[in-house]
Amino acid sequence: MTSRRSVAYFWDPEVGNFHYGVSHPMKPHRLAVTHSLVFYYGLHNKMKVFRPYHASRQDMCRFHSEEYIDFLQKVTPQNIQAFNKSLSHFNVGEDCPVFDGLFDFCSRYTGASLEGAVRLNNKSCDIAINWSGGLHHAKKYEASGFCYVNDIVIAILELLKYHQRVLYIDIDIHHGDGVQEAFYLSDRVMTVSFHKFGNYFFPGTGDMYEIGAESGRYYSVNVPLKEGIDDNSYFNTFKPVITAVMEFYQPTCIVLQCGADSLAGDRLGCFQLSIKGHGECVKFVKSLNVPLLVLGGGGYTVRNVSRCWTYETSLLVDEPISSEIPYNEYFEYFAPDFNLHPDVSKRQDNANSKQYLEAIVKATTENLKCLTHAPSVQIQDVPEDFFRLQVEEEDAMNEMLEKEKKTRVDPLNEYYDDDQDKEMEIDDPTEVPKVNILQSDVNVLS
Image (cartoon, rainbow, N blue to C red):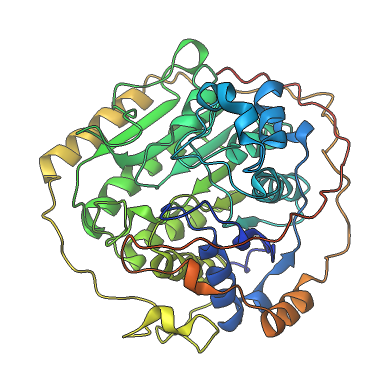
């Protein structure tokens, strides 16, 4: 019997308090609800809970341009008029709005992913979980698809200091275009994305024939899916593709983006996955017994996102939990059934035929056979970690307990059953401590 793997969980009591604006589908409040469920299920007792590091401007500039990060650091809803020319240049506007505390929000979710990578590199955990991360659309020079800073790319750059080959897997309904673009010319990172493709579905990339270029040829793997895919069809495609990837690429670390907009009933999605079906992919990746960084991503029906990520936390710590949701401060969100696994109402037929999916698996496997070998890099002078890792575990669990008892973000501005939403006020962001780091010696091509 294998021993239970060590899990680090990043909990930030403030990251769920940010607000994209009226009627915007992205709700950071889903993170507060997820953390609450994780706590009330007692899952925090099965892992090490940490208050995460806050990423600095310098951390972000390891991938993003200085001009873009300077803009994010300076722009606010109060001074936005002074940046009119920059808004379109950096693709900031309706989808990616300027809101109170924008840079602080980016600093928090990026810092958690970065610290997760450092803890994996230092072997202080086997699995690191940051549900606030996974913002996979952000580009080197601009925001995209509700994403401003690409925490995934920055975390992978940190992992590459110690790992010869990093595998990135994306089960968000949207193509992981920002991560693919960053490593499109590299054989050090293989990106594998399972996503809806066609009919102008955002972001419009992710065709099966996008396979990488130059040194990265065949190191980008795309699995374009049609609407309505169900649990069986999805997993019967996911498992053979990932199995083949593991055989041919032999990664020494995996980053898994668990976007929950691939669930049935998502506000912006069109798949028919159940929470258990989504979790089967997480369970399978965990079973590969490779150091694993688990991140969030999309997901626009708050109650289902929190259910999903709580269930997947339980899978990652090997702790079965009841389908009956325990009483908590967000209990009314889960009416009328108060069940962790709600029934999947079939909104549309599965447009993915067995023949279509088999053809994708076959084509993917054939492309992987073109890899002559798993690339090997001799790592000599490893750059220092971006911050000095504390040896002792931060006692975040007690703080988490006290926080849950004393405070609650008013849910009325974040929870909805339709497109009606209200504005909410956010306290001024706290000052982020600056930590000096060394620049990575890995070049990322945009």
